[in-house]
Length: 205
Image (cartoon, rainbow, N blue to C red; front, side, top):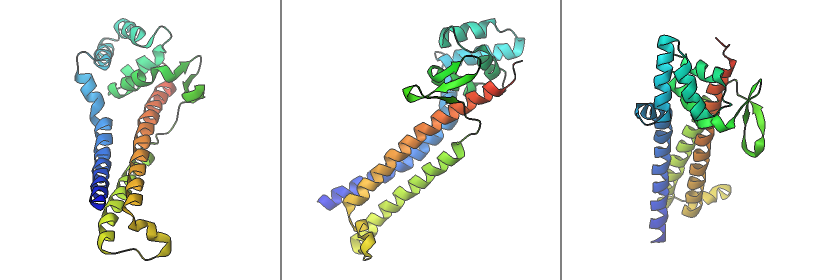
């Protein structure tokens, strides 16, 4: 009975890992679009003002709304730079998500946890981090398949005998799932900072 429970938990872990890949892909490609489509969202209102700014060149409505959303000390250059882009919503969404981390006092900086301050990243780490997510998913699937293999066949190599334990495999699978979750959060955070950094490096119009 215990072995059946372990196998069930292992394959639940495999299902979670596969779902994580889908969830990350969905968040990257569709989440901001859904927020923009909602008439009640801050992103929707900002995007509407950004379209009016691109059409008319009038900044009053956009800057007034930005002042309410970001506070009196917001960097107008970042907002105007985001609004002037053909696809403004990803940049505006990044500003909304990370506004508390952005410092602007002559130079745009980012304040991380524990008040650690750095420059905004100049390169996008998304490809590397997504590769790690995909590799983690493959590792989880390997451990899941290994749990079935070791029902009938035992690994005889002394240094690899831990592979015969469903407990060990289950713990490894959930450890990788937690790692994937952390990597996905880091990916979203760093990608937002990269987008904001792109805005900061754009010359003021």
